[in-house]
Each structure stands twice: as C-alpha cells, then as structure tokens.
Image 1 (tube, helix red, strand yellow):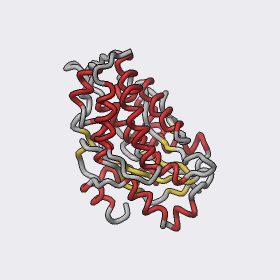
Image 2 (tube, one colour):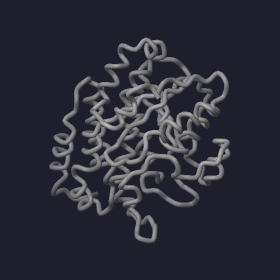
Image 3 (cartoon, rainbow, N blue to C red):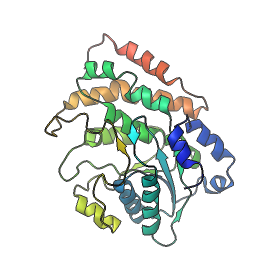
Length: 287
C-alpha cells in the first residue's frame, strides 16, 4: 500500500470528494479514465478477491483499481487489507495491471444511512437495517469514483464479492432483494455493479477460484454490528415487505440525494438530508 493509506483508514476523514480532487491531478488516472477493461475492485476479504479474479476471467478485464471504503463500525488490523491485496496481485493472470489502491469513505454518509436514525428505522420497519444500509453505502461511496473514471456517460464498473448464500446460510445484507437494490442504484448513475460470484453458495468453490485455503471471515476486518439481525440461535427471520419498504422509502432515496450532491462537487449535509427525509415519512403508513 502507498504511504499514508493506513493512516487514512485510522483517521477516517470525509474523503469522497477529496479522492476526486486528488484524482483530477493524477497523471496515471488521466491516462486510465475511460479506458476499456478498467474496473474498480471492492477490496475486503476472501470473497472480494475471488470476485475480482472471476470478473477478470469472465469479462476480459485488464486493469484493476483496488479500493477500500471504511465504515463507522469496523475493527482489526489494516494489514489484513494489505494481505488481501497481495493475494489478489499474486493470483492475477499475466497482462492484468493492478493499480495502487485507494482508501476512502465518509463517516457522515455512513452515519446518515446506518447510525444516526437507527432507533427511528427499527421502530418504523421492525427490523435491524444497519447491515443492509452499510452495504448500500459501501457500493454507493464508489459511484463518484466510478463516474470519474468512466466515459460516454457511463462509469467504470465496480466488482463486488456479494453472495446470496454462504454455505446455505443467509446474510440479510446479501439477500436477493438487497443485491438487486444495490445494483439498481448504481445503474441509475450509469455504473455497473458486477456480482460475478453472486450465485456461488459453497465456500469450497470460492477457495477453488482463489487457488488457496482461506476460511470465511479469517484475516479480514470485522464489524461490531456483524450479524445483529440474527436471533440467538443464528437464524435470520425478516419480513421481505419490511426490507423492501426500508430500501424504497428511506435508504435508496437518501443515497440518491447524497450522490447527486457529490456528483455536483458539493459536500452533502448528510444528516440534514436524512432528517428531512425521515420527517416526511413520519406519520405515514407503510404500503
């Protein structure tokens, strides 16, 4: 990783616009903007590395820009992100260029979707939506970068390691309606969210793609909110209509408004936008 990336992860500044300002003066990025075969990689744990390898094979990609987007609830050594990057580099086919990574994010954006109104959201929708909102944030935070690197009204694609099933276990933030919502939101802004391992259920198949043993959840950053939607026995029970309502009424409209601000070169007033949206919903009836 370039010097300073671990410090950015540690300090978690408001950096979505900052990254765009930095890129605008980068000779490397100017060379790559609009380049066919370029994609942004969501760098996290083993699934993200497997997804990048699968996307290269399936789509003929030849240039990858790894990115790590920080949240408000993760923990663990940043060296695991660096190790994931090293594993990706070591497994890429000859001729595929991997660029220096960017660490980026927005605590304000994350809070507006996931923390600032959590009590209101729990009361309104009857489910714990933080993980769904967090994954929506992780994808949306890369959209301005994708747009910057694209051409002809389209952004560079984003490769994600989301999977609908993990050895037959569900994650609320990766059920089909949630993945469809993430991809649909990106598409509204001209960005393809590639999900090359979406239908891969078995962890053994992920390790086949990787060409190495890497147990799920090992050597990747953790989250203090992980699995908060599960029952004490590990079960996932939710009302699909409630999840859809959370996405359609709050999460997607808020994310759209925030992205419009970013793409106009303005720093969004994240919580003001969230509060205004929630005030409009308060007192209304679901459905």
